[in-house]
Image 1 (cartoon, rainbow, N blue to C red):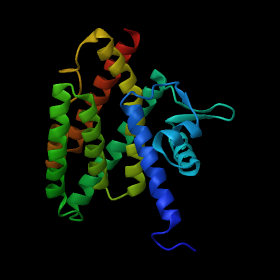
Image 2: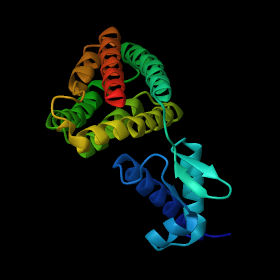
Image 3: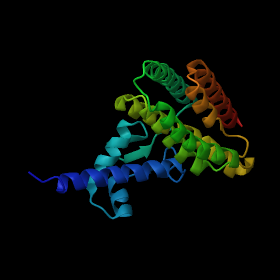
Image 4: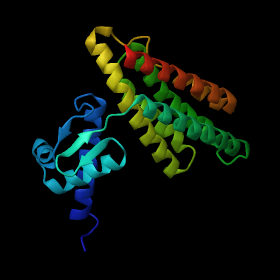
Amino acid sequence: MPGPDGPAVIRSTLRQQIADALRDEVLAGRLEPGQEFTVKEIAEQYGVSATPVREALVNLTAQGLLDADQHRGFRVHEHTLADYRGMLEARSLVADGMFRELMAEVARGELRDAPDALLSVRRRGEEAARAACAGDLNVLIGYDLRFWRELSALFGNPHLSDFLHRLRVKSWVCAVTHLRRWSEGGGGDLRGTLWSRHTELVDALVRRDPAGAHAIVAEYNAHSLSLIERLATA
C-alpha cells in the first residue's frame, strides 16, 4: 500500500489541480458552452497522463459543469435561463437557513468568535465589492467565491459549505457567458453593473439581523436574474 506521500495522493492532487484549472478556464470564458474536447487533448495540453485528466473531467461532469459523450469526449455544459433561476432559488434557500442557524448559535454563545470571524470575511467582501465597482469580472469571481466560501464555513457544516460553493460556481459559469458576450461584443464595460453589497451583508450578520441579510440576498438574486435575462435577450 502506498504511503501518505505515495502515488495515490499525488494523482489525487494532480486530478484536483486539473479540475480547478479547467473550472477556471470555463469561468474565464476560454472554454465556452458547447465547446468539445477529449481526454487526450487535455492531457497533452497540461503534459500529464490520461488517468488524472479523465478523473478530473468525470468530477467536473458530476458537478454539472461538463457533459460526457461516450463517442466524442466531453463538452462544456450549456446552462439555460431556467437553470439559472433554479440555482438562484437554491442559493437563497441555503443562505437563509445558514444565516438563521448562524445567528441562533451566536445567541446561544456557541460561536463566541463569530464577530471577529465575520470581520475577516468582511475584508474579503471589500475586495469583491471593489472589483464589482471596477467591472473587473475575473477578480470579482475569485473574491466572490472566496467570500461565500469563508462565510458559509462559519456555519460549521462542510457538506453545506461545499454544496453552496458548487452552486455558486455553476451560477457564475452560467452568468459569465452572457456578461462576457455583452462586454466583448461592444456592450461596454461592466462598471456599475455588477452587484457589490458584500460588506452590507456582513454588517447585517454582525448586527445579528438575519432578516436584513435575507433582504440583501433577495435583492442580489433579483438584480442578478434581471441582468442576465436582459443580456440574454439583448
